[in-house]
Amino acid sequence: MMPACFRFVLKVGFAALIALAVWRIWLAFQHGDFVSPIRVALYGVLPAAVALAACLLLFMGHRARLITGLQVVAIVLALAGAEIWVQWQSHVAAEARRMASPPLPAPATLLARLRDAGTLAYPQPCGWNLRVAGGRAGSPVTVEGRPVLPVGGLAGNAMLWVTPDGLNERIADQRGFNNPPGQWMPGAVEIMAIGDSFTMGADVPFGHGFVDHLRRKLGRTVNLGCNGNGPLFELAGLAEYGPHLRPRVVVWAYYEGNDLVKDAGLEMTSPILPRYLQPGFSQGLVQHHDAVQASLLHYLQGHAAAMAQAVDRPAKPETFAVNWTQLLRLGALRRALGLAYGFPPESLDVLVRALERARAVTDAWGGRLVFVYLPGEARFTGTLARLDADAYRRAVLDQVTDLDVPIIDLVPEFEAHRRPRNLFANHYTLEGYRLVGDVVLEALRADGSEDDR
Image (cartoon, one colour):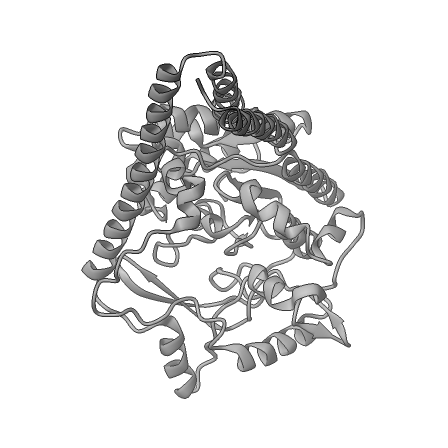
């Protein structure tokens, strides 16, 4: 006979488990997890089933409870072991890649050498770096005492990228973006591309991103892509520079890996960025260009070390340590399964509102807004990952379709590739960027948006 006090403890524990399951289901609904059928099972059905099984145990014999308890312990230990193993595998793979690469000085060190030689060379910030540094003010860059949040970097600054092919350098254009000279010609720009690091062309040599491919085929193309951009930074770039350049086509490049998963929610905490959702808002970055650049340079001169994008790497492999926070959340295991693209409905609402404003801004000069959906690598992890990612993809594309914005979806093109994961190397590989450029170019020609000039 089970002691009354122990039975009472079990009842309280099971009641708490049921409450936890109900709370988790409610939280899942609140945060949009139920967009994905995979998450319905993981965050809804599974907790409810566990809670129900726990209740049923109260009416079973001692032997059944003991066996079930041992099975639960075994499952918990197996999940913890799998999480630690995945963390260790990720650490080993990362260290192998790091140690196999020839050691290079940190970009901050290289930039300091260039500055010593008289070259304008500071860690090139994107708006995200400045938003974080600005804290509640929104930006450390000020004009006449007013915080101003640039959406580009420092004009004429030496930009350094470390890629598998070695060290690459380019001088930032007259507005601080990754463009060759001669692109900023108001009224003569064919394409304006807005997006994050995938649009910027990260992890490949300068001149080999998908926007560069469009430029070679279509003529003057202005790339406003920058690391860390989400929907509001992308809208900001369009609102500030679109009316000045009046491009024929605006390519809005959406990356499923973080635009809504992370970036949109963080951007809404800015005191400046959400104002771009209001008609007519502008910081006057074109009109105040010189003052903004002077303030940005002053900030970089005082914070060059803090803005460094990397540090000198140790010559020996680093020791593995379990990430206990990730262990409790099974974070590495979930990432290994590819369950990486869930986002709350509030973030999707931000994207929709940003696209509505973007279309209105573009329509004002007779331009055309095109939405490009860029896939992430996690969706190709396996069947569960694909089903999960596709649920969120459908949610995004349905909203964009309702806005009557043309869509260029790269997911089918990547899926048709013999080995889709070969198109990724942190960002895209040269082949991946070339594929995106080819598909976007073909789609623009098909709908009559662009022809060769």
